[in-house]
Length: 290
Image 1 (tube, rainbow, N blue to C red):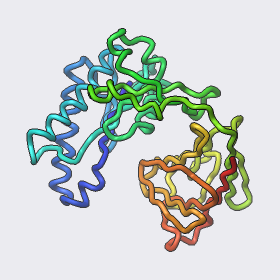
Image 2: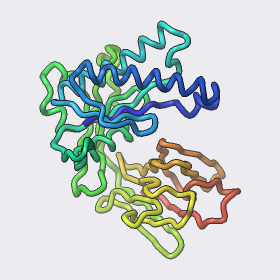
Image 3: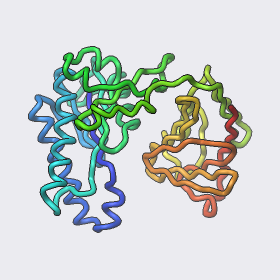
């Protein structure tokens, strides 16, 4: 399973307007979809500016992901009116799925979507399960990134990046490789509820729906609004929402996230969907300790 998500589309709409931006987004998705077909894959469905795809094997999926990035990179170099300013982030995972009425479900789909959420623009992120079934040539073009917690799984998943640019293959960023993790914990408080994240509980989900670890009764909050997780001795908040996530640190610095992530540090507050000065809702308070 592969998810390809367009990065930079929000800024494009603001810069060009709806009509022109929508055309460029559609052109970008068309180029992505073309590579899916070339490598024997199938587009299951579009999800906004993202496409969800299925491939017969991991080799084909990784080949398609590399081809997608190269097609868009070439497009930027050769046509000023093409998908300039747009790039994609790709996540994929190898495993079995459940098929029903033209759609697919199951753990493999969920993990692939999580890999796409972890990826940055221009990046391909996958799992150890995928790397293990690749040819030796493609395995040589991967590098270990990290261990990532995934909701519903007791163990962290080992994640890899697929390198598709030659200069990145010859200059591996060793700072991304696993390093010893210092002891750290994060204290969260929302109204009367308190939670602690540490080695035994590395992540929590935040949103309006009942399955979330912290349920925020706010009409601007999405059902699964954000995740907070521990990686490499730090705590990251990852926005997964429509209206975005606002973070305010004790030194007064504020950050707005939309499908992005940031490291939590010191003390501060988190608002779901509303800026602090415009919200009457109770914020989520956090304290980082290490």
